Image (tube, rainbow, N blue to C red; front, side):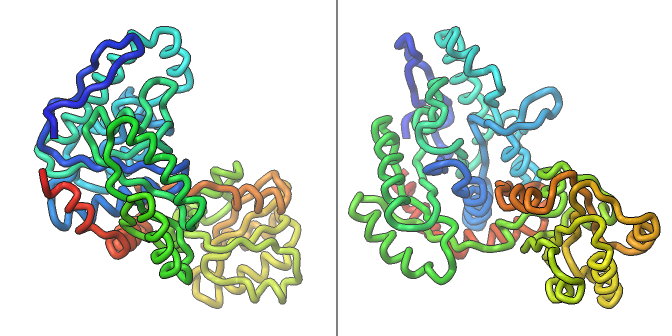
Length: 389
């Protein structure tokens, strides 16, 4: 691997990349947003650590960020910082955050901004990769994302001298087509794609996708590095995420109910007797606040199970509160109850349209992610891509 990568600013000036030449770099890109890059990186980090304990992480260009100590830090960098003992300053793991005005500022004066962005990414990388055997570099979508500020994933992968793994949702035709398109842009930048991972595959289709996905990619000269099954618990939001999405307000059970995983949503447009059949752990019931018959049934079910959680929670709609007597009874239980101003189908639509991002507090999900990725990727093939170095 060369001592330093380089790229050019819009004016043609040569821009220097990082000085680190020893750490092996894996750049994880997606064919589009929400294909599972962060999930793949989380599991791949753990898998690499099983062979090489010194593993680093960086997300050079972030788009979803939080403010920490006056700096804009990408959410995924926060997730890795809290999940793994990386021993890297978090600012180095998230050197560039695309705030709402960055694109305009850059286009007004690209010759000034381009060297600054290259310098920030290069310095961040050198700190994140210091004394590491491998470093995972997480991209921000497909190969071309970031082109407007001359920091596309392909450009950043070239700048950092990385080899690329492309992640796409499961299937054959569309994923193979999109992987080919992304590989072409990486090739144009002189970046090696070592293979692809097909994610979110239904378990009963795993062998089919593995066989024909491999054949389809092989025709393009791309290795299939893994086929990751859909795991329902990984795509399920917790109740706190749902409350934030619908703009709801907690009425009861917030401390214990926040992290309850919601596996199924049911609209309570039935009799209380029929509703009892749906009262199971993981089920979220959406019901108007004046349906006290269903609320009574839910509380009775909760007591019968000795507060073991008959349902994940209840969302009351249209801002209709139960009677004061009913609220007193609810407060005597651990039943999570939330109220929303939307009607039932509006609440259900918002929940069904949610994009679920893994959070640092998802203690139930992270070990499952690590196990799922470890069991379904070809780690040996990934390591072989760096053997010659």
